[in-house]
Image (cartoon, rainbow, N blue to C red; front, top):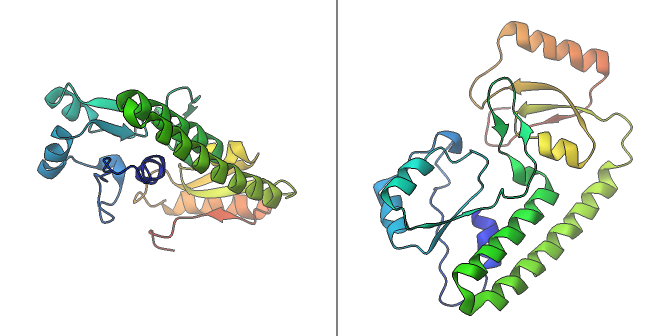
Length: 209
């Protein structure tokens, strides 16, 4: 969301984009709002969120700063159910088509909140969307011809990516980051790799190989 906002607000001199989370924040599913965050939010015109339930700290913010405008970039995007009883999967942006919708929503909402800069927000959003569409075309070119479309993912962050590129997730190694599979689960995944001849695991570089 920070990168999307930076692109939409690019070169607008009176607009400052602040990232609430630090690179060392870890798993954002469990992020707790800090005193510094609340001070920044009290002086902010808007808070841009992914939505779809990923920001579990929103109740604290909206109860303490009810006048703060919330830009929920998940609006209008059909949600995919998560594993088990986890509710809706919130990892929308992993689909580049969803990311394009989110950028458009951020641009539209910032234009309403700050009409003096509406033209610039639209120009910036359109320019960034054009770049994203170019990346999407490259990715389809690389992936559309693959015959074996079965993949295994590190955790349950990739259903929107899989839907975008018509891939089939046959197993998830960790339901949530840090919840390592037990011996039985690992054995079942290895059996699937062998039986289905899976050639690809989608991993994340910040977690142990």
